[in-house]
Amino acid sequence: MTDTAPKRSLPPLMTMTDRAAARLKTLYEGAEKGKFLRISVGKRGCSGMSYEMNFVPEIQKGDERIEDHGLTLLVDSKATLFLIGTVMDYEVKELESGFTFTNPNEKGRCGCGESFHV
Image 1 (cartoon, rainbow, N blue to C red):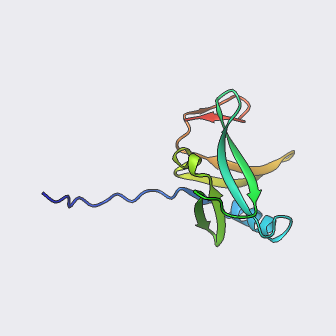
Image 2: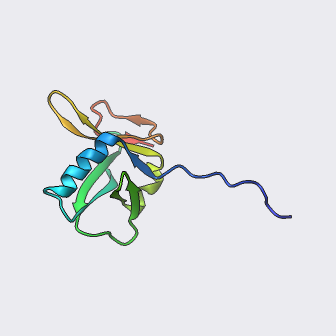
Image 3: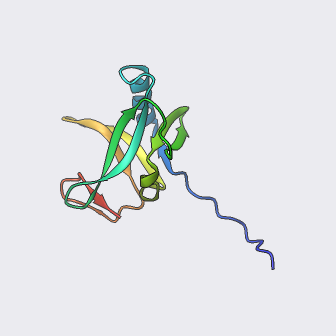
């Protein structure tokens, strides 16, 4: 018997909002020229996991390459299962600004918002 059921398309690993893309483009054209932003997940905080971002000079073996808004973003292969469907934004608040993540896999965050669990 042949399986003829249509395959369900997977959501993109990650996407960026227009604000995140604009900020990343500014960084890529300025101080981080020639580098890539690499997203990973580390163990930290009271909930156990945290988003980590580093600028790297080249794609590392196993990195997932995300193309969005004409920009390249890297995701550590160990983080992919935790980040499927995540949207990266850039928020500017009165006293701080930075990249934020809306992750449908999160089951909760710590009180200070520094860490999460899935």
